[in-house]
Image (tube, rainbow, N blue to C red; front, top):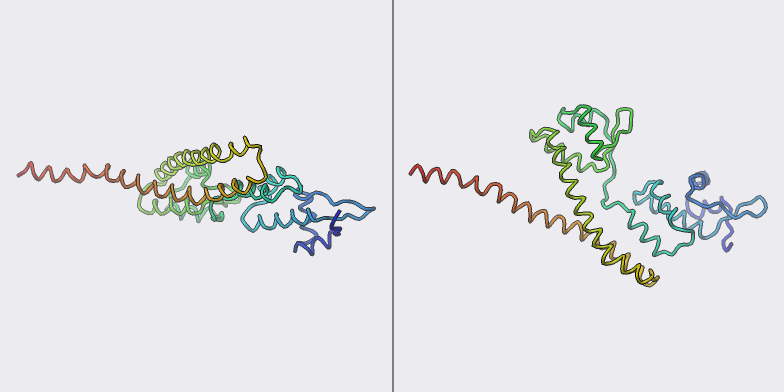
Length: 248
């Protein structure tokens, strides 16, 4: 082992407590040290893995997501492989989940809340029941947007109907972008034998897809929303004119 670090030395190197390192080992996030007699020694790969865990936690990953990534990535894996794994699993926005108590949720929804509404919001993934009267919103922006529509006088049930339709449609959009990446970037890469020299190109393509997908979706929405409003109200706005002409 090139670097021979005791657990105390390892903790000092990566800026973690010994207790946290032991906890990561218990969870399966960090392989055990090499033993020499009764002393365990850690190496450079342990250092790299702990630094990766810290970096991912600061980026919003929870420990379960980190474990899934590390379970698929062997110790000593190339930096490009880890970069791709992290890009695939990274959240597609910078939102942090928010916890509401039952009273706050009732206020947000204008007092229109019952068990049926809560159950449906949970089913749609808009909120998660944490127990003890607390709920977590994975996307607080969606909950706040729904609350603003409710404040306009639209029933909460209608808002949930609309959100469900939107989520179904966005699933199709997401699948279209995933198919684009798989068919035109990933599958050709696999057919070539996944050469190490091409990892950088694959990673760059995935990372560039994130802002491009968001921009395309927003631009397409603006375009189609304009057409939809024009089609919905164009004829209605002409009707009074026809009535005036007929009266004349």
